[in-house]
Image (cartoon, rainbow, N blue to C red):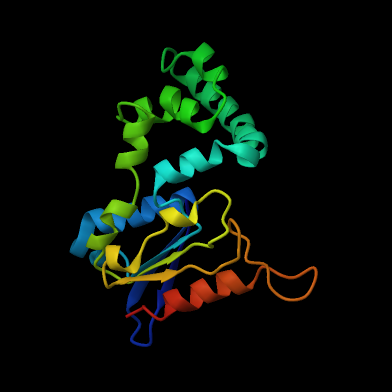
Length: 207
Protein backbone atom coordinates (compact mmCIF):
# COMPACT_ATOMS: atom_id res chain seq x y z
CA UNK A 1 0.00 0.00 0.00
CA UNK A 2 1.09 3.60 -0.36
CA UNK A 3 2.79 4.47 2.88
CA UNK A 4 1.97 8.14 2.86
CA UNK A 5 0.89 11.17 0.90
CA UNK A 6 2.33 14.40 2.21
CA UNK A 7 0.91 17.79 1.32
CA UNK A 8 3.33 20.71 1.45
CA UNK A 9 3.22 24.35 0.44
CA UNK A 10 6.04 26.15 -1.38
CA UNK A 11 7.19 29.73 -0.98
CA UNK A 12 4.46 30.99 -3.35
CA UNK A 13 1.76 29.16 -1.36
CA UNK A 14 0.99 26.77 -4.21
CA UNK A 15 -0.06 23.33 -2.96
CA UNK A 16 2.05 20.37 -3.99
CA UNK A 17 1.70 16.65 -3.51
CA UNK A 18 4.46 14.14 -2.90
CA UNK A 19 3.90 10.39 -2.85
CA UNK A 20 6.03 7.61 -1.39
CA UNK A 21 5.34 3.90 -1.50
CA UNK A 22 7.07 1.17 0.50
CA UNK A 23 7.60 -2.38 -0.77
CA UNK A 24 4.59 -3.49 -2.87
CA UNK A 25 3.07 -0.02 -2.56
CA UNK A 26 6.14 1.47 -4.19
CA UNK A 27 5.80 -0.90 -7.13
CA UNK A 28 2.17 0.14 -7.56
CA UNK A 29 3.16 3.81 -7.38
CA UNK A 30 5.92 3.46 -9.99
CA UNK A 31 3.62 1.37 -12.18
CA UNK A 32 1.04 4.15 -12.01
CA UNK A 33 3.61 6.86 -12.81
CA UNK A 34 4.89 4.93 -15.82
CA UNK A 35 1.43 4.10 -17.10
CA UNK A 36 0.19 7.69 -16.90
CA UNK A 37 3.33 9.37 -18.27
CA UNK A 38 2.94 13.12 -18.69
CA UNK A 39 -0.52 13.19 -17.11
CA UNK A 40 0.91 12.01 -13.77
CA UNK A 41 2.41 15.47 -13.34
CA UNK A 42 -1.10 16.85 -12.92
CA UNK A 43 -1.50 14.75 -9.76
CA UNK A 44 1.88 14.74 -7.99
CA UNK A 45 5.13 16.66 -8.10
CA UNK A 46 7.37 13.68 -7.35
CA UNK A 47 7.22 10.04 -6.31
CA UNK A 48 9.51 7.65 -4.47
CA UNK A 49 9.54 3.87 -4.10
CA UNK A 50 11.33 2.35 -1.12
CA UNK A 51 12.59 -1.25 -1.23
CA UNK A 52 9.98 -2.07 -3.84
CA UNK A 53 9.84 -5.29 -5.88
CA UNK A 54 9.71 -3.58 -9.26
CA UNK A 55 10.02 -6.96 -10.95
CA UNK A 56 7.34 -9.00 -9.19
CA UNK A 57 8.30 -12.23 -10.90
CA UNK A 58 11.90 -12.13 -9.68
CA UNK A 59 10.92 -11.07 -6.17
CA UNK A 60 8.03 -13.52 -5.95
CA UNK A 61 10.29 -16.45 -6.71
CA UNK A 62 12.99 -15.15 -4.34
CA UNK A 63 10.54 -15.02 -1.43
CA UNK A 64 9.53 -18.60 -2.15
CA UNK A 65 13.02 -20.07 -1.84
CA UNK A 66 15.41 -21.11 0.93
CA UNK A 67 15.44 -19.12 4.16
CA UNK A 68 12.83 -16.70 2.83
CA UNK A 69 10.39 -19.56 2.28
CA UNK A 70 10.93 -21.04 5.73
CA UNK A 71 10.60 -17.76 7.60
CA UNK A 72 9.06 -14.90 5.66
CA UNK A 73 6.66 -16.87 3.45
CA UNK A 74 5.19 -18.58 6.51
CA UNK A 75 4.87 -15.24 8.29
CA UNK A 76 3.12 -13.63 5.33
CA UNK A 77 0.69 -16.50 4.87
CA UNK A 78 -0.21 -16.52 8.58
CA UNK A 79 -1.42 -12.96 8.10
CA UNK A 80 -2.85 -13.20 4.59
CA UNK A 81 -4.92 -16.36 4.86
CA UNK A 82 -7.19 -15.13 7.69
CA UNK A 83 -7.76 -11.86 5.82
CA UNK A 84 -8.72 -13.76 2.68
CA UNK A 85 -11.07 -16.01 4.63
CA UNK A 86 -12.71 -12.97 6.20
CA UNK A 87 -13.32 -11.66 2.69
CA UNK A 88 -14.87 -15.00 1.75
CA UNK A 89 -17.39 -14.61 4.59
CA UNK A 90 -18.42 -11.29 3.06
CA UNK A 91 -18.63 -12.71 -0.45
CA UNK A 92 -19.41 -16.46 -0.40
CA UNK A 93 -18.11 -18.32 -3.43
CA UNK A 94 -15.39 -15.76 -4.10
CA UNK A 95 -12.72 -18.47 -4.19
CA UNK A 96 -12.11 -22.08 -3.14
CA UNK A 97 -11.45 -22.03 0.61
CA UNK A 98 -9.80 -25.46 0.66
CA UNK A 99 -7.38 -24.52 -2.11
CA UNK A 100 -6.48 -21.28 -0.37
CA UNK A 101 -5.83 -22.93 3.00
CA UNK A 102 -3.61 -25.50 1.26
CA UNK A 103 -1.33 -22.90 -0.33
CA UNK A 104 2.30 -23.17 0.73
CA UNK A 105 3.82 -20.06 -0.79
CA UNK A 106 2.91 -16.69 -2.28
CA UNK A 107 2.85 -18.07 -5.82
CA UNK A 108 0.09 -20.51 -4.88
CA UNK A 109 -1.75 -17.92 -2.78
CA UNK A 110 -1.74 -15.39 -5.61
CA UNK A 111 -2.95 -18.07 -8.01
CA UNK A 112 -6.00 -18.81 -5.85
CA UNK A 113 -6.76 -15.35 -4.48
CA UNK A 114 -4.91 -12.25 -5.69
CA UNK A 115 -4.72 -12.89 -9.43
CA UNK A 116 -8.28 -14.00 -10.21
CA UNK A 117 -9.87 -11.44 -7.90
CA UNK A 118 -8.10 -8.64 -9.74
CA UNK A 119 -8.74 -9.76 -13.28
CA UNK A 120 -5.53 -11.67 -14.00
CA UNK A 121 -5.41 -15.14 -15.52
CA UNK A 122 -3.00 -16.56 -12.95
CA UNK A 123 0.03 -15.69 -10.85
CA UNK A 124 2.40 -15.46 -13.82
CA UNK A 125 0.06 -13.05 -15.59
CA UNK A 126 -0.36 -10.97 -12.42
CA UNK A 127 3.34 -10.75 -11.61
CA UNK A 128 4.21 -9.84 -15.20
CA UNK A 129 1.52 -7.27 -15.87
CA UNK A 130 1.57 -5.60 -12.44
CA UNK A 131 5.35 -5.05 -12.38
CA UNK A 132 6.54 -1.46 -12.63
CA UNK A 133 9.89 -2.24 -14.24
CA UNK A 134 8.72 -2.46 -17.88
CA UNK A 135 7.01 0.95 -17.54
CA UNK A 136 9.75 2.96 -15.86
CA UNK A 137 11.03 4.21 -19.19
CA UNK A 138 7.79 6.16 -19.55
CA UNK A 139 7.95 8.02 -16.22
CA UNK A 140 7.75 11.75 -16.90
CA UNK A 141 8.04 13.28 -13.44
CA UNK A 142 10.78 13.17 -10.78
CA UNK A 143 10.91 9.64 -9.39
CA UNK A 144 13.25 8.02 -6.89
CA UNK A 145 13.71 4.25 -6.69
CA UNK A 146 15.61 3.17 -3.58
CA UNK A 147 16.69 -0.48 -3.37
CA UNK A 148 19.44 -2.06 -1.30
CA UNK A 149 21.63 -4.55 -3.13
CA UNK A 150 21.30 -6.97 -0.21
CA UNK A 151 17.49 -6.90 0.09
CA UNK A 152 16.56 -10.55 0.79
CA UNK A 153 13.28 -10.21 -1.12
CA UNK A 154 14.62 -8.50 -4.22
CA UNK A 155 17.47 -10.06 -6.24
CA UNK A 156 20.03 -7.41 -7.15
CA UNK A 157 20.00 -8.76 -10.71
CA UNK A 158 16.36 -7.65 -11.03
CA UNK A 159 16.97 -4.02 -10.06
CA UNK A 160 16.39 -1.35 -12.72
CA UNK A 161 19.36 -0.18 -14.79
CA UNK A 162 19.83 3.49 -15.61
CA UNK A 163 19.62 2.84 -19.34
CA UNK A 164 16.25 1.10 -18.90
CA UNK A 165 14.49 3.93 -17.07
CA UNK A 166 13.62 7.46 -18.13
CA UNK A 167 15.88 10.43 -17.42
CA UNK A 168 13.39 11.51 -14.74
CA UNK A 169 14.17 8.46 -12.58
CA UNK A 170 16.87 8.57 -9.92
CA UNK A 171 18.21 5.19 -8.81
CA UNK A 172 19.68 4.74 -5.34
CA UNK A 173 21.07 1.23 -4.96
CA UNK A 174 23.41 1.08 -1.93
CA UNK A 175 25.19 -2.15 -1.06
CA UNK A 176 23.48 -2.50 2.31
CA UNK A 177 20.13 -1.70 3.83
CA UNK A 178 18.12 -4.89 3.61
CA UNK A 179 14.37 -4.60 3.23
CA UNK A 180 13.32 -1.19 4.57
CA UNK A 181 16.16 -1.27 7.09
CA UNK A 182 19.13 1.02 6.44
CA UNK A 183 20.33 1.08 10.03
CA UNK A 184 22.92 3.80 10.62
CA UNK A 185 25.32 4.83 13.36
CA UNK A 186 27.01 2.85 16.09
CA UNK A 187 25.25 -0.03 17.85
CA UNK A 188 22.30 -0.28 18.25
CA UNK A 189 22.02 2.26 15.47
CA UNK A 190 19.00 4.20 14.27
CA UNK A 191 16.60 4.12 11.33
CA UNK A 192 16.30 7.85 10.69
CA UNK A 193 18.80 8.23 7.85
CA UNK A 194 16.73 6.60 5.10
CA UNK A 195 13.41 8.44 5.66
CA UNK A 196 15.30 11.71 6.09
CA UNK A 197 17.21 11.21 2.83
CA UNK A 198 14.10 10.22 0.88
CA UNK A 199 12.11 13.07 2.39
CA UNK A 200 14.79 15.62 1.50
CA UNK A 201 14.92 14.29 -2.06
CA UNK A 202 11.15 14.61 -2.43
CA UNK A 203 11.02 18.12 -1.01
CA UNK A 204 13.53 19.29 -3.63
CA UNK A 205 10.88 18.70 -6.26
CA UNK A 206 8.04 20.80 -4.89
CA UNK A 207 7.19 23.61 -7.29
